[in-house]
Image 1 (cartoon, each protein chain N blue to C red):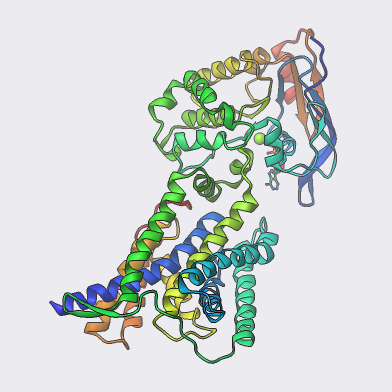
Image 2 (cartoon, rainbow over the protein chains, first blue to last red):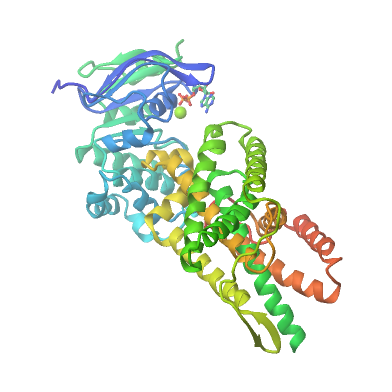
Length: 239
Length: 291
Ligand SMILES: Nc1ncnc2c1ncn2[C@@H]1O[C@H](COP(=O)(O)OP(=O)(O)O)[C@@H](O)[C@H]1O
Ligand SMILES: [Mg+2]
């Protein structure tokens, strides 16, 4: 099972303007399967994902995806490698229809040839979206918008999918639906890096967890280590 | 009956010119979120390029489209030089007002140096006059009334029926999400400016065919386009198009009943009253976005 990592973040320092959020952070993902990231709010998880996908340029360090150094590439160039990021907060394109979003997902030349095959996958995963294909995103519920977010990313034909709090703020029923869909995507062969507050979901999904705290990886939980939920909660809050 | 047709044709004609100007301003606002104050200068430049090409001896059917294409390049260059470097700044709206005003004034003075202060005139799109419903109109005006909706319809289908148009609409709504699906945001910004400059250039060619041209001919149309865009709502391109025709008809009627002198004052009165009731403009929706 121990393969080479699909994604490695090597001593990355990044932030916004003069504010540094990530301090020399290092982690490897994909060697053992899916990766979960958790930690208190405001400690740099979103910034880490934005740095990986090229929305934030790191001040130093390297990001390597599948053996290729992608540090400093534009977000567009990174999308072209198949590293796809579902951002936090499902803001999306409020005045576009679901169908428009799916067409945009398949915009990159890499994804274009797989458009109809991926559309079928998305519709199978989220039948709700098919019923509302011509409806504007702004008129959808939070859960439906998250489905559109994930669906759009699947249209981009991901080789690695990074998800930022996919179940944030959702009602329990729709949350379960989304968790199940994310598990489905993983079983379909797409490796995942997921930021989540719901530790139980992360434990179910991932073989490796990182606790991000003050812009560094504070604790790594390796596969095989049996770990109690309560211990994680202690790590989470005990500092 | 002839009063009605007078107002009708006058309104259609003015409305067409306003729509052609305003739609480019709205396009740039919705995609990039800045106001381009060199839009009036684009109009002037389009007219002068066309005049120069005609002076070189090119026939109108080649010179005019060529001038419009050259304007696309001019718009792209302006965007790359005074807008793109500022993107991401928190005060971008104000800064771009200043940089585009500065660039506009530079270009205007350049035009004055190159072409001189003497007024010039472009050939009409179609020579001749005709009488419709008791009103004498020039075929040039008829051509403008017909061509404008066709161009605007073409723009609308481009934005709503093509993948590239979809990309432009997307970038207007969420830049981060656009980057995350692999859109080339910088190129799309350039494209928005290129299209806007072409449309302004075409408006300049329209105007140069029935009025004398001079290097500051774009100032008044820019002001009108701003009024149209504010009146129609800056969140879409269909809002300003409707508003342009509405204002065209309003002006034509007001010119007829109250005279040229009172029309600008009345127009502002209506504008202020409208904005007090609907601050987002009469045809606006809630967000920035092309539709
Ligand atoms: N666009 C931004 N500009 C400036 N600071 C930001 C921006 N986005 C996030 N931050 C700051 O960066 C820090 C980390 O935020 P974030 O990466 O969103 O954390 P998390 O996802 O772990 O909650 C916070 O202090 C936040 O205020
Ligand atoms: Mg976050």
